[in-house]
Image (spheres, rainbow, N blue to C red):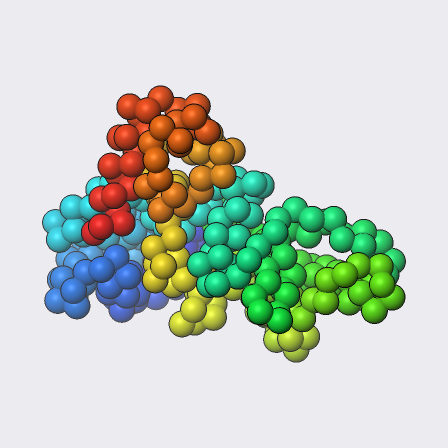
Length: 275
């Protein structure tokens, strides 16, 4: 049996179906996905790194979808965002796409102490406390401590509302992170009723699915975009590829990136979104 080596050094059996699933998410047909999986299986060797397999997938996918040459891996692209403010703005855009109105970076008084809140999302009679957790290493798991803190924050804010110390009646709390969640943390969250959106969780509505279904790609998905340019755009509140379709002059003025270069970046954005 052939084993693959994951980023954390652990090993697991080579799974051809995972390659097929990745290709399908990159919009390959089933026949194309199976063909790519066959080619990689033929070249696989014991201990092959998962990163190497992903590189092979991208290489072979270019034949069927040339647009692949303009982008990097989505998981890596999200990790390349800065935790603050980039990822927080990015998550707020996700909630706005789901019909919520959002406010970011608020200080709200609980019963006992003040709390710095990443995002407050409201829709109709529902107000949600959103905690954002971003890892630069996208193979890092989000653990129990994050959920313990979120649960205690929610309780203090609810008690503060009852005593009139704040005017926000939070109905729920939700954690959004760009990595997977440890099994220990997952058990606690489910037991306490704390919702969370993570990488591949919930299974049919994980972070990657929401992004792909709504085409809410981060600007860092664009392979040709320099890191400093990404920072300038994010400082101007532009963190999604869709936002790059706005007026070129306006983007240039906000980001201090020359109009000529903004136009080039915008062309890459159109290719990714129209594919």
